[in-house]
Each structure stands twice: as structure tokens, then as C-alpha cells.
Image (cartoon, rainbow, N blue to C red):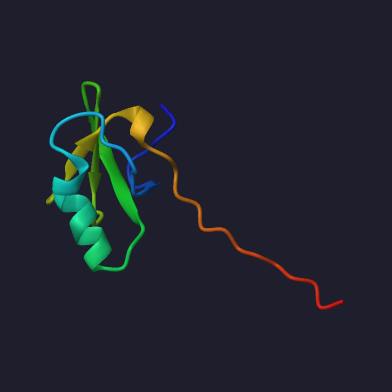
Length: 80
């Protein structure tokens, strides 16, 4: 498995299972916090559980194909 508990996952652009992505409580809460990631909190069968906080409430399920590891990119510039 490429995800482990606590990993930050970029907010998915698609939601292949369950309710429509527009109804995702986890995504709404993350956006309210000005956060562009969710936390991976486990798997139930083929469903991957994501939460706004690193705790077990207000989560939502996604398929693995919807998920991408969040990595904050740093840009370095030369002063030359």
C-alpha cells in the first residue's frame, strides 16, 4: 500500500465512490481551514478514508485512484 495512516493527501479532484464530491464534509472543512490537503486515516475494503483533521470524525471515503500524496513544493531561486 502506498499510503500510511497520517499521510497528507492532496484534496481529490474526483470522487469515484459514495456521495458526490460537492457533498464531501471532509473537503468542505479543509477548505474552511484554508487547507489544501486531507489526512489518510485507513481503508475499509476498497474505500480509502480521509479526514480534515488527524482524527476520526467528519471523514469521507474515496477510491485509491482519486488519491495523490500531498507534497508541498519549495522553489529555490538563484540571485545571479
